Structures are given as structure tokens and as C-alpha cells.
Length: 199
Image (cartoon, rainbow, N blue to C red; front, top):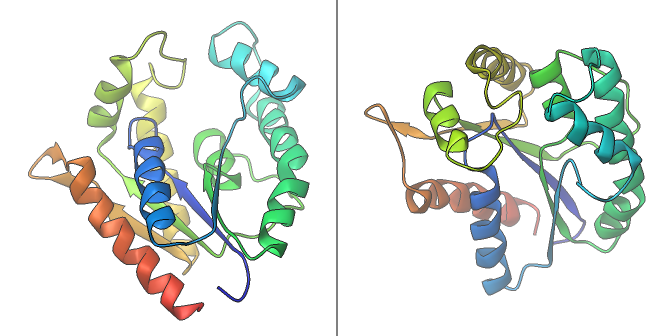
């Protein structure tokens, strides 16, 4: 690639973001693409993520704006590293980004962060997404709240219509979630198309 690319993979809890990013980075490495992945929030990394963790455990009663500032603080601390990777011409894949604040919290902070080249939205039925995450230990307050996930999904879909650089991947087929392998095929095709256009 001539220049670095910042790609965001986003979606509600249980949409398969982490799995797809792991599969994607493996694929890109096999193709010789210089790639870095970063996942937000970066738990255990700074004071902001400690606040986020306590909020999601129900230990802190923050307003949406207050907790959005903590998420933004974590991203701001990661900004120099993201910019360094982009200067090096790397493909940077972010698991959640500023879009998550808008979708989950309804807060649009004016952040001085690198603008994503494109965002992939993993669109999943909130009932299925919630079922996926409730099987793991200690689900957080957002994961336990189906109404929250339904509202976040609506917000994500609204955001996808406002920005032409968003690509929506439908994760559902006949009422069930597609297999990770099937979803990966769609995402790999998107990346191949984008990488060719930027080569």
C-alpha cells in the first residue's frame, strides 16, 4: 500500500468483531500485508479503562457523556501509536472506535482522532448478539440490557447511512447467525477490493 489505512470493525456486543479481526489479521499476514490491530477499550492500560471497566460492572454511575469522555480518553492515549502505524504504511484495524460512542451512548464528542478510511458494521439481530455474549463469564451492564443493544443497533444502522465509507455486513441468514467462516469470506472480499484500490 502507498499509505496506511485505518479500518474500523464495529457492531453491537455479540456480533463477532473480535473473532473476525483475529481471522482477518491471520489472512492478511498470510498475504504479506503489514497489519496492526487495536481493540478499544484497552483494558488494563490506563486510568480511563479502569473507569470504563467499573462502569460496565455497575460500580460507577456515570452519565452517558461522562463515560463517553473516558472512552475518548483511552482512544486519545492510543492516537500516537495509530498515527505511527499509518505513517509506516500499515493497515490498522480497530475493534470499535468513535462510532461506538455514538451508537452505544448517543454521544458525539469532537475528537482529534485519525479519520477511518472505512468502517465495517457487523449487523446482527440483538437477540442473537445478546445470546452470544451472555454465555461468557460476567456479562457487563450493556450486554445484559437487550433494549440497549436494540437501540445501539438502530444507531449503528443510522450512522451507516450517513457516511458512504461505511459497509454493512449482514451477519444473519434465515434467523440464525452466519458461521464465522462465511462472514470472513465477505469481509476478506471487502478488504481485497479496498487493498487493490489503494495499491
